[in-house]
Image (tube, rainbow, N blue to C red; front, side):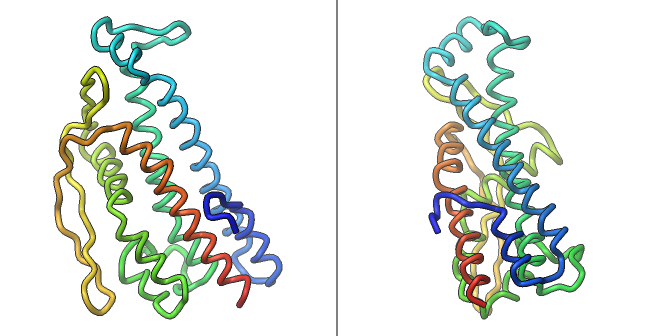
Length: 226
């Protein structure tokens, strides 16, 4: 499979072929993840189209409102930053639910332990995709997305500074995972400062999402052979 692309319908088709349970739930879950992907794409390209150097200069010096927009340019790019990262967070956070439906380790799909946590992930330790699963869990950009989304959801918006040539987040805290012995993962607090917004979002779009695709494809490859 091409690791830069993913057909989420493969989760449904493979479940049908093997005549397994949870088909309807897998269909709903995979469709939901696919929608979040589409939302990410929309907000990413809308953001790119509103943050050229000319746009940022005009926004900083003139506080312009572009033709066809009902708010100033700053609100356009701020809204799309928030929407992209929130959509990506929802997409990634919903994946353990789909994984447990596809390869169950808990009988109850609503078990609160089904999440990006070592207690759940290490139940897949004997599967050949385990190292890829853990590697994704340890990705710092994944936890920057989580830290950003949780901060704006539970505390406050993270302000964005227009530096004329680029955008920069004010500082925010994330929990960075550290793998220990016995398949355990601990978290340490880290402050993110002077983060270039567009560089980070581009990194998520061009590397973190394809890395997620690669993980899904490896799981699909495993399932198709078993």
